[in-house]
Image (cartoon, rainbow, N blue to C red; front, side, top):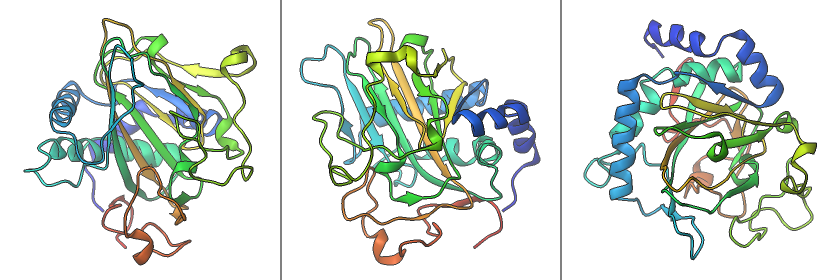
Length: 288
């Protein structure tokens, strides 16, 4: 696929070789100024429209009694405009910015596919944390070449940012559980190692985290342990997350509903197959 040359130049500027090496080593890095002010404005407009008209996939993630409000929504970049007027803004962010080129550099991959989008907004005063977890065990993919971008359109203080355990992307896979009631809905009990109690001994872990301004982002591997707290009472935290896939990623159908779910995909894409499907468009690399 042909991409504008300036996107590759922008990607090298925000993700030089030393930052690529840090991503491979730590599984999480901070990217400064990865989106332009105009791109941030467009994305913020899309998030606000999404908040006004959530999709059927939206989830309220704040706990009962929380003085704030935490909502998530998924897989909206392909939606039709009448039902999701924000889809075009999401699509442009995922495809028309330098993010695919940055993804290629960080993953060290010749190809880049869009996996899915994920909107996460915590309104002022939200106390519900996002617990420590890895993302990949919730998904329907296998392979190492992947990257997620966590992109705020509001300033994020260090206390409210996403945190990571450096090097945890190197393994092992840990048991995914529901955030609200800690149930093992995905892998059977005992089939994966349990998550350590990181909050009980934070000083024992190499925790990374950065205060962020609009235009900044963090990039992380889907196996990197990460978590986030609530938000300050006077500050909103609107975030858009994008996931991209590289050369070695293959389909891993599960016997359970993944998060997010891709209904019917297992019927047309067998286990172990590359992710060659229209819902995962190829953004960089030779056409299929």
